[in-house]
Image (cartoon, rainbow, N blue to C red; front, side):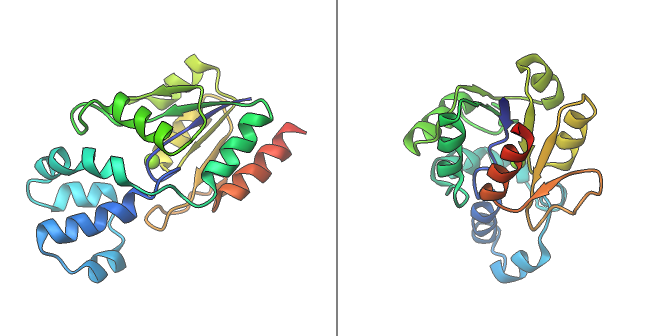
Length: 186
Ligand SMILES: [Mg+2]
């Protein structure tokens, strides 16, 4: 299968890395911020000069962001079993300094196997169709719904700040992703 995979908050703990940086920069109480579980949209609409914060911090954050538990092992297993791994991320040049190079180097440095990396993917459904994706994994509800509308199965990677959606199959771990792929492949 061709497996399309998002990067931020799907293979990496981006949100958990970002919130302490926001608390520090804006002089906020981190515990309170964590309790509120603000969405990215809420952060963007409520924090002053958030665009500047993004430009100044996202590139360095993306270099140090930790991987989600088990993701490297599961992707290695899937690759060994003959699946193709195609990363499809909406990281773009407005928010990141050279998003392709940054993401490519990060994946290599962290020994993540992959066949292709697509950045600046505003319309992920379009990219999935172009790449012949058979299964798409992303934490973002909007992207999962759009891809599913094109007849491509999706798994929504669960995050504390994303509400459940009855239309989507949700997974809570990379081991669960592996299980679902086995079920699909039989
Ligand atoms: Mg994401």
